[in-house]
Length: 111
Length: 115
Image 1 (tube, rainbow over the protein chains, first blue to last red):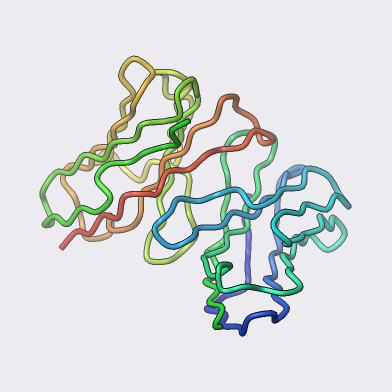
Image 2: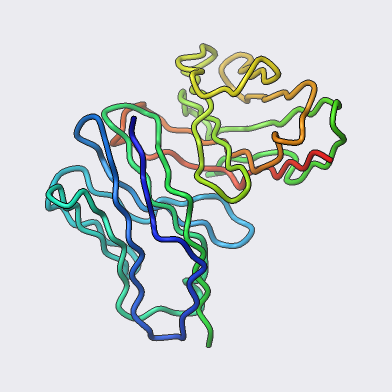
């Protein structure tokens, strides 16, 4: 079946540090890949997505590149802020509506 | 435009009791989904409605769970009787169209604790 494995947390960083959250996947077909973010007290929000190999999704300073050869979709941000503290979920879907999520990575950014 | 809303935000019940969770999707969204995150693990798909019809309920854990979507508007998810392992966060999402490239908009979730 389809599955997502992402880096376990929690991750604690200082402001302006570089953030990477690793995500790898297995899929029965050609997936679309997503990163969702959940800020404290809020619902999941789509952060970025990529629908084909070598596509780069980007939003709010975050980037992730769809790497088919390594089945990866790592999330990166060059300089994090306190407001980036949240839980980040990597997810995929293969041609339909079911999202398969990773376990989530809790990120805390200290001032 | 209002987002996806869920009620209640928290529910604490005892084993054997019944709980009903409610989800109001974004107006005009025909597709409604339920997901669950248990014990800080991955979020798992439960089921998918298109309007009032269940399109896929393959993720429903067992027959103690019953989901309905009356008139194709809001949806309820009833757990009866609740067991300890049902504790977790239940998310609802909606989308205008189905298909992997169509963004699903999520609600804040209902945190269910079964004692």
